[in-house]
Amino acid sequence: MEPIHLFSPAFRVEEALAEVRECLEKGWTGPGYKTAEFEDAWRQYSGLAHTHFVNSATAGLHLALRLLKEDGAWSEGDEVITTPLTFVSTNHVILYERLKPVFADVDEYLCLDPASVAERVSERTRAVCFVGLGGNIGRYGKVLDFCRARGLAMILDGAHMAGTWIGSHHAGSDADAAVFSFHAVKNLPTADAGAVCFARQDLDRSVREWSWLGIDKDTYSRTLGAGPYRWKYNVEHVGFKYHGNSVMAALGLVGLRYLEQDNTQRRELARWYDEELTGDSRVAGIPQPEAFLSSRHLYQVLVEHRDEVMLGMNRQGIFPGVHYADNTSYPMYSYALGSCPRAQWASERLISLPMHLRLTRSDVRRVARALTQSLGAS
Ligand SMILES: *Cc1c(COP(=O)(O)O)cnc(C)c1O
Image 1 (cartoon, helix red, strand yellow):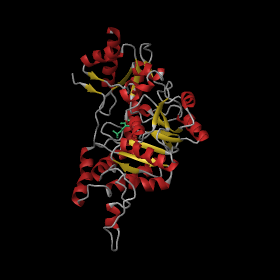
Image 2 (cartoon, helix red, strand yellow; image 1 turned 135 degrees about the horizontal axis):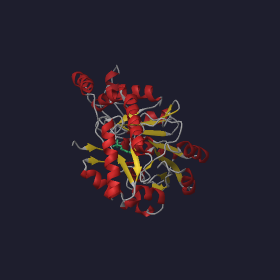
Image 3 (tube, protein in one colour; image 1 turned 180 degrees about the horizontal axis):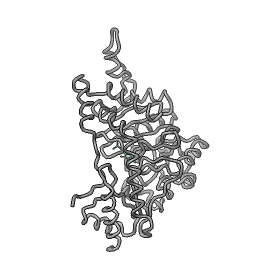
Image 4 (cartoon, protein in one colour; image 1 turned 30 degrees about the vertical axis):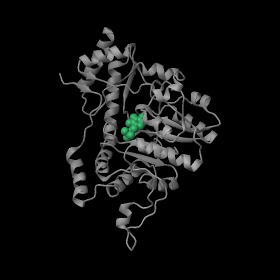
């Protein structure tokens, strides 16, 4: 039988090639052109008024921290409250800025628990980084209210949340900065790209410089501009090489056209998994809060003897994943080991079942059977 993998991006090949062809024929594959088109399309779709297309969500998260740190005159060693249940990007960028990741525990949604956040706050806390794990919004609203009351910045790591809606608002529309990933296996896949969306227009203006080495004018605007001295520019900061390019944006434009349709299909897959698995007391699902529409990047369950269960599934040609190992188990965050017992407990039991658009109803049944049989054997 065909193996079933965790992720498998489904590109609309002909449409994607047509968009990329336009870049090649125009002779413009770098930043500008399709990146500007993508930014407009994402703004229109999400309502996030300031969207900057970058080369990854990691870059976007780093820029979010750098600009908020500059703007708020934070000092080295100031603290950012964050989750241990995330891809390491979320936390590495805090270290890039010589700030201190302070880990708070997660709740039953596997997102930051507002009560734990409140416990971990100190006079050096400057920001909270909230991760919507698998597209789940968790208690984001409560954490945001807390940030507002305490004057802390809210950064949403929305790497799993392209197309997550809270009522008519896209996830992140009320954060100081929201960051999305368009990496190959995320909901809106390119090969590698992301977006950073600031609430403030002035920060959006400066992020365009910061993401291109601090140069105060981009090549595209200079090409469009008329008059003498088009070649001239100033360098205002020691910025980074983090901007996106037109080939990635071309792929993103096509993906965005199908994002709603794809996420609807993901929610259907989740419903099928629910049908197969609810009622089996050995498999705990992750609750979803009411009144929000998840992008459903992941379908996660919690089981005992996780490692053996995974091996059992592998033997049946099913290759699930784990999101994530508790980050405090890694050497650079081990100072916080044991400080987030719920995250640690979950990270030893979590399985992400295959979740991608090529899966059929019978694939989902096959995955669920492999899971329950492996549970029986473990
Ligand atoms: C994938 C991911 C990132 C990083 O995204 P890139 O675009 O690959 O840099 C950040 N945070 C989370 C939660 C992720 O899953």
